[in-house]
Image (cartoon, rainbow, N blue to C red):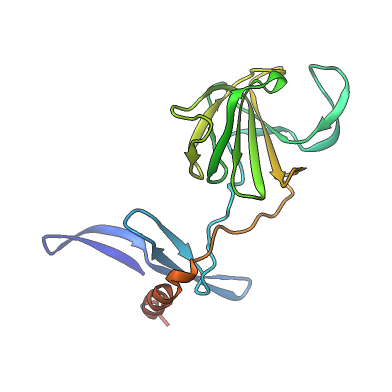
Amino acid sequence: TVERIYSRGNPVGWGKILAAEYQNDGEVFSAVLFRKNDEQYGYFFPDGRSLKRMFLKSPIKFGRISSRFQRRRFHPVLKRYRPHLGVDYAAATGTPIRAVGSGTVTVAARRGGAGKMIRIRHNSTYQTAYKHLSRYAKGIRSGKRVQQGQVIGYVGSTGLATGPHLHFEFFEGRRYVDPLGKKFPSANPVAKKDKIRFKEITRLALATLPP
């Protein structure tokens, strides 16, 4: 079901998908658009779970993984073995870097071998770090709130780097984790205070789908 946009009583185009169903391995899944206010909206399963993941799969839209998370890797600059507790994305200097999740910038500064870097606290459990940047996006500074997918900086080779790339780190608590091998939770579900309205909207939306 898709909303229709009208101007002076005449249809002029299509808006958002209001409700949809899809089948995967014989199982049918339903999703409903729930507007929280005039600016924010999201798609949710009928039980209130969000279809949106808490984190993007990659901080770069178009980049090649040049080095994976490893407990022991030969460092190309230091010429010795040491842990590589992140993922490297090779990309041209100036390639935009996105925040993989919403959160608050806690560091936006030059830090030794990391070069120009950004660290984001997403909640009490998860943090991410973005290193070797060439520059920061406009307005990015410590204390700044950022949204998932927002450009926060640009690929570079500052610090200990042999060429332009992004070194991306993911923290769960105070522990490094491999973001490529971790299954992260969905984004926040429908809030308890919105559940009654959500259930009514879901009932009406699903009723418009073909049998």
